[in-house]
Figure 1 (cartoon, rainbow, N blue to C red):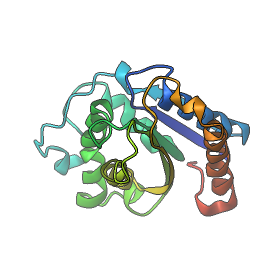
Figure 2 (cartoon, rainbow, N blue to C red):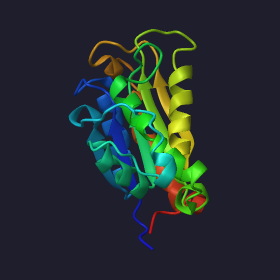
Figure 3 (spheres, rainbow, N blue to C red):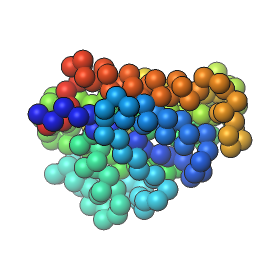
Length: 204
């Protein structure tokens, strides 16, 4: 068995170098410091068509849309830890991130319609959500967290925690919080150390 944890960071914001980007990078650095192999993908660089609800995936678990999502499916399934980072847009995740989530209907079909053991009972991944929002509303993250929980569930991934920061809007605002980046780094380390403690086994 390969005991090196594979971590996939998914950047759902169109703004490079912004608050969510800084937090994701620190989380991945923390994971790498614990010996994980970390990879990042930026959804704004991918062409992901929204789900058509054609239900073709109910037949064989495969999505019929020939776009860049086809290259993301295997990355999700090969990862031991998936970290989704998205700022809040209208009390939800960004359109880029939501398109990916909706297209995960194919993985949901494999798990719940076709009962693929690889998605239903076998390897269980760890999932983590990183987000910032410009206001300080107490319910600001509720919709996004619920969406991310069900996204993770579609490919047998446990929602293992999150980092959520309110009142972060302008580019670089997160740096005004002296503990934010260290919290992100610590979260990355903890995800990998928990994996190593056999709470979740790395993918062979």
